[in-house]
Image (tube, rainbow, N blue to C red; front, side, top):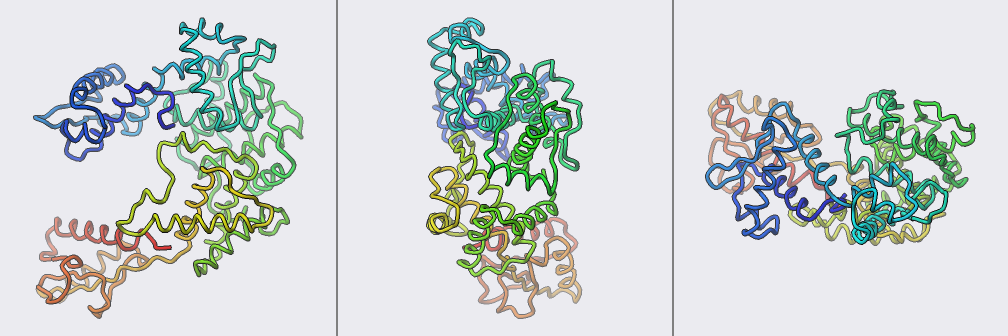
Length: 498
């Protein structure tokens, strides 16, 4: 969550930490100042504070800020995972903010007034109001707000339960990311209960556990149930029929309520966690919707077929189904939820961020934006994409569909080795074992090649597409060759032109 629940001073320290951590050979204060937009006068002060924080958070000097001559580096003990270190430091800084203190208190308690809240957390009423305004701005993206009415509702949340649940799913993972168990002691038994999906990563298991715990808490302890409109329920229920994602605990609610709850739970899992369904299950879901008579199925088919027609793409059947599923999930979200929380994202979602070095992404984005406007105005059962965030993501999704289904260009390689009669074949076989046949191909005509591997001067061949390979018994030359080809693939094959 970009800049949310973190004080400005802590944001600076966290940014400095990442800049130093990811600098290849260390970094000095001048580039640190330029990249972080922190004045030179403050840099040393911030670095000293950062070093103190690392010593406090990570015991036995397992994470240290080191200065060698003029360069700063971060040393992390081998027993610690780099992601764990980053997320732990980030969580520590988030937990220092007033917004986190307030929100965490409201999540676990009910307050009849702002004054009662400020007294509980030992914060001035004025500061509490200021922080509540910031919290409500973030909640507003989800159609939720915090209220203090003095009524006996026993909840400070105002909004539809589907929106509250959506926010809680987003918030708990964005803040905690599996670093700690962030729930009250009475819910600790849920930590050990199996998650409802097999064959997923450990972080995804923790995330599912968070989601199941949040659902249990809202149902058991807050007596809140989700209510989906009939169209949304029909879509979510069909998804959950092909591959049921069900609670691992008995919710002790009516069958009708359980269908609503598990259908919504399954959809949010599919939206937030990529591996909730296997690829085969995603293809089965796509087939089921294509065969159905649901309005959203017709909209999905219309948009997907038009994208392929516009860009003269003939996808394989499997690619078509997979793209259909990806589009279906997003269309379901924007049709029935349409929450725009992109202002909270840590990274910009615009294609233009990829620049123009390898492909003209600003032009692609403009072109795909026009196509999205046109298709949503013409598609059956869909309206104008009013949400800026949904529109931006849909443009990105259009590019993904094209990129996923478009056959990549091959990098054509000509090899010439003059010192013996076997090394040319050795190079071909070695590179073929490392790179896929979709990525590279070897040609016998130098005029058909994209680049040349040779141990000799080749008159007239452009230098930028030439690799000098001298000794097949030198491991450094092999490493350099693989690195060179990877760079060429990145430039010429990885980014596809629309």
